[in-house]
Amino acid sequence: MSPVLVASAYRQLAPVEKAFVDGYVQSVEREYAGRNERISNALYRAIPTDVVEASRGLLDKPLVRAAISERINDLAAASELTVHRVIKELMGVAFASIGDYMQIGEDGHPNFDLARCTPEQLAAISSIEVDETFGRHGPSKKFKFKLHDKLAAIDKLARYMGLLEAENPFWRQENVRPQLVALPAHANDDQAADAYARFLNG
Figure 1 (cartoon, helix red, strand yellow):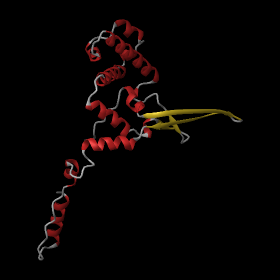
Figure 2 (tube, one colour; figure 1 turned 60 degrees about the vertical axis):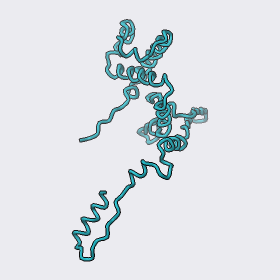
Figure 3 (cartoon, one colour; figure 1 turned 120 degrees about the vertical axis):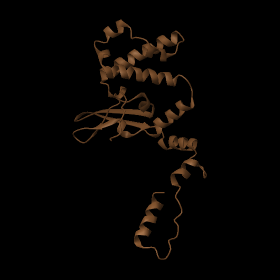
Figure 4 (cartoon, helix red, strand yellow; figure 1 turned 135 degrees about the vertical axis):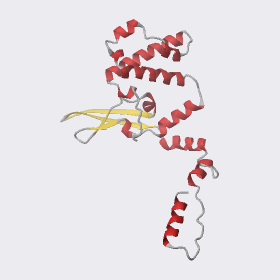
């Protein structure tokens, strides 16, 4: 059976859908902050009728509604400083990939597209530079961005998990192997192969 892959609804949105979700979630965030109420409560209340009508059918799309719930859940989780939140931020930096931010065009050149990035992926970006010049053959644009230090984030996660300690349970569990017992001199090839297989399989 093939593994089930769960993709971010927000990342799959078209730009106009993403703009609507961002605007709506921001308004919900302001509203609930003004009432000093947890934003997670918005997940259990109906979206106002006027907002549904103003969405021009966008809220009829399951993916848009899923993205709204996704973003509200993210904001609810981020509203408190917890170990989980810190680890999540470090994981976002540690496992960010250049492939998250670009697609290869038909001409074989990379096309950077930040519109479909999740907020976590955007948070992994340290800086963005756009250099636009106008030359003899028309305008040209160079786009460059830098991610936060992946190795530093991985190092912090490794230390949190105890992976850099001489006696850590993760390493010991993953690398434990039984000792190979010496075979008697009269063992045949089949017996030797069976003993070696048991050794490899633990």
